[in-house]
Image 1: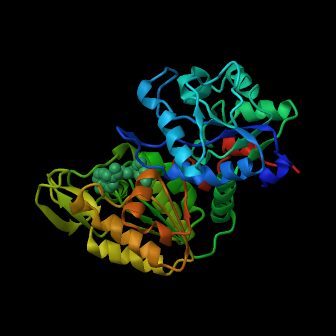
Image 2 (image 1 turned 135 degrees about the horizontal axis):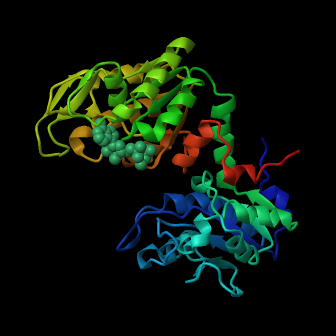
Length: 393
Ligand code: ADP
Ligand code: MG
């Protein structure tokens, strides 16, 4: 699989280029609260501007469901981007403008203000296609959705003889995650956590076929522990998934790989920073108590496996890291991954936040900007936003 990239655009000087970015960032009353995703696309934007191109930038933000929502306008993103680039960004108030101003750097309004975006509507895509003579996709976080700006639009561009290529961010994501998918240095260790096992069951099933060890923490571990008959007290659990997680455990045994589950957990009677906590055996949690973090023995066991890895993939926090009494497990795993000599990749909004809050992001080889997209990619699934950019040579 080979992506078309900026090289395939040839000389961009004086051309109007549509850049689909992922500016789906958190906002607060002062503007952009976290600009990591904006920064991640700056290299692509800079390279095109340096080449003399005029750009139309576009992104979705939040879930406005086809309606204009004042609090989801992209103007604050435009302001932040202008600071990062040190040049003006003209943020339009309309998603599909009838005519484009002459400005070299224009940003369209939130794509999802138009119902055509999520519906992958060819008419909506047609309106966007009128705005440029080449298409660049740098929105890895949106690559798993067949939405108009990443699917119907590049299709239309290609069908009308105009190039559709990947930007630098998307190119790097596919390079790095492609290596994990097709040719990981072994041992390949994956660490999964987070709230719901049902969100990540497909990932578990796919990784069981590919990795050499799978470490599972977070709330999702309790569904596996309970499926094997452990007492999990009042921890989060999804009993309707027992059959599927049991199948994963069986498949791991057949392949001779380890699924490592928590031994001990930090438990409390409420999900609160103000209540007493106890460290208890993960399969012997008293009634009325819930496991809210992995315990110190588990951190040590996970760290041992991580230390022997050549490739580490991490997605999902080990506990309720947002609350200080339940943050140690996630931090301990972050430190173990940061300290390893392996090629290390972290993805997922919350895991990434935890790693960055600990100041450990610099120690990872790759911070994936795609949560759902990176997992689907690593499952080996075809992502609509990526297949359309592949060279079919
Ligand atoms: P990511 O965004 O990294 O993919 P998820 O969104 O799947 O991660 O899960 C993150 C959430 O999981 C966090 O809000 C965290 O509080 C929650 N979580 C982790 N462990 C537990 C637990 N044991 N009990 C309840 N919630 C948990
Ligand atoms: Mg999340």
